[in-house]
Length: 196
Length: 151
Ligand SMILES: [Zn+2]
Image 1 (cartoon, rainbow over the protein chains, first blue to last red):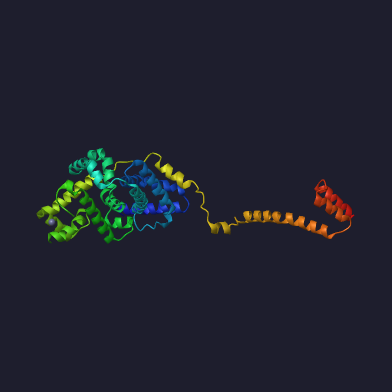
Image 2 (tube, each protein chain N blue to C red; image 1 turned 45 degrees about the vertical axis):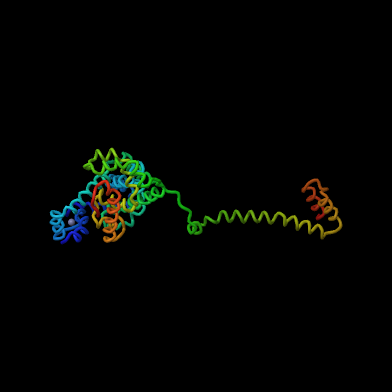
């Protein structure tokens, strides 16, 4: 039996134990998925404190609706869906509160953004520009930011994206194409010619 | 396949979603088409700069915090159906009924006694006079007079 399949069966039996009253067993599930969940929340929300809270909320919500998990997808994909919905709400709230325009960002930090985008991507450069990156990403719609994060950071397949985002494969392809187009159009003048 | 047809598949190729002949068709096209190569390169730059995987690790108390939260019984939200079924309405309703009874019964009692006094004659009229003029020093005195009369 392949490793993934065996892990999924173990996870299902663990979930059965939790549902039959062994609440302590949930700790095992949290331990197994905490790093991944925190990572996706951090990638979506930017700051560590909000991300830790969002990851906590994700596990709490997952526990509350654990009975609805039927094992038709991997537990991790199901968890992505809960984290995605939760972070999407937070991003929408932030979007309503955002005051900086894209033009203002370019005017104030265009040079820095240019340097970031033309330099060979490396973790040190990215780490040094965290705040700027978050300001830039805040201009994407929450839906675009979510799908790009799940694809580019988490490496979800189109099928997994369809489950996590609760939509069809065609919708995944269309949303991903529009998200990339939007982002490339915003930064095109930093990158020279070319379009999606 | 021509540039336009490949262009539409370029990101599916980049995302690893193409297999077999369609994958090979894009690979072959990329060897000849600088524009498609440039687009992929641009995207790699953008995503490499903006979508790096964050290096974070959960705090030591992460699991504990989740567990504490799920073990803590939540204050139950008020539900009308539960409230009605579990008879939670009985206590306030009974309280209200007692209060209404006391409010109604008090003045009623007084009305009846005054009416009975008005309807009576003889000795009672002196009692009535005392009640109406406040001549009786207290309720007990009035009661005493009435009792005396009854005997
Ligand atoms: Zn081409």
